[in-house]
Length: 382
Image (cartoon, rainbow, N blue to C red; front, top):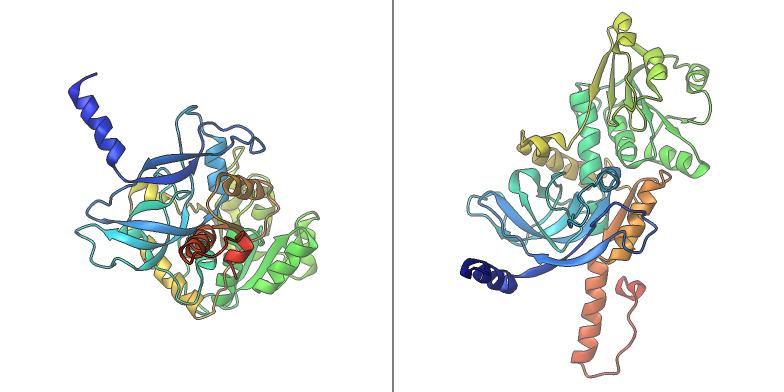
């Protein structure tokens, strides 16, 4: 072993470490080793980055898809995109943020993920977290809010401003999911008539509570349902579920010069010629394209600032429906199972602080020299 290698090993040993939850293969989520815990090097920010101590994160379908497609067996990989946290260190060229700022953001798809204690992120991609939201609610919002904003602005070419689309109609396919739960609310803010699909009684009620004007049952003929409520055609369609399966429906019910935006890849070729006679448009929305291509990162930060204002004003409300307490292998696995079930409404969040608060209670008990008590995650929330 060379002297250089020995020096590197010694240096690595003494560098600060952190806990990370990730995978080394893409086996069944039912397996106990579906996720593993590792000690990894704590990162340091570059000149235009900040180091964030993560307080809570959310699991998204894209996380589960990346895991399912993982092919580097034996190589440790950490996922996770949605974050709320506190800045612990700033790069020398960062002027918009300071140590101690509570921020929220959606990270880069191919970077080291958020299922860990600390993460570095470009300062352009983050914003101050909404003041009126706690960590759990704030963690649920970045990726889905940016996506909903992109559907409206880049997909439909609408300004995201109050009543900017007054009198227009939008069909949202999968209104109860993470993106749909935000898009329903944003579309109402724009003054649109919102028609959203859902399946169960619970999810239909959820979508109505979020403001949908009409809720359609995706188990039944959607074209007949639209005609029955006097919307045989709509101005806009947001496909948040299955672009291929709903292609014929979308081509049939979009108005002339209408706009269709989809966030889900096709599984088979679709015929864009179906839209030509109506001069209708189709576009992809993929909010991770900015980070993947290092393109216009500052727009992502601006969108999050706008979203934070809407949340603080109560224009849109947070969409958390399930919370796991503490960063652990089990909680990351269970949260991923929830999302892959395709029956989750809103967002699933992992609250890191619950575990930290519980540990603090134990430490305080010991410090006070009193008999130790069992502290559960429920106690930590009291």
